[in-house]
Image (tube, rainbow, N blue to C red; front, side, top):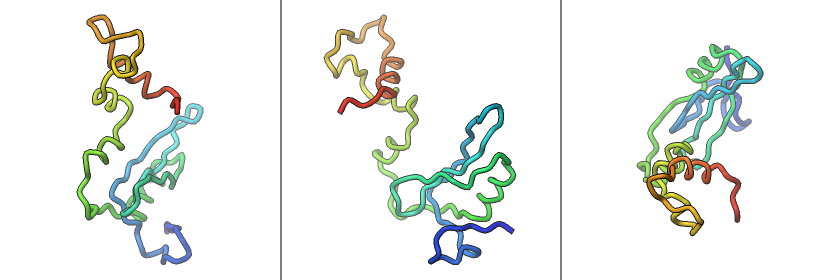
Length: 127
């Protein structure tokens, strides 16, 4: 039997975690895949990562036994959608930083804006 341990206040063996989003992510550790559940609980603005194993069967069982996917009360906003984008998706949606930062490079037929933007998104912030 799988126990879904959360907090002492919950009856962890009967109550499933209510989430608006749940993904199984895989990371290669050495040459072995390591599976984790990434989820966002209802009412929270951030993700948790846990319920991890080298065995996909364990993670799939935890997904079914421990989580209930439900719709959030408030509809997703465009800002929510932007926050959930990958770097690659975001690179297609924002302006080329060469045009907005006033750098030497300007967009022209020889400049790869998508690559430039992706590089800029993945660079350490200059706050």
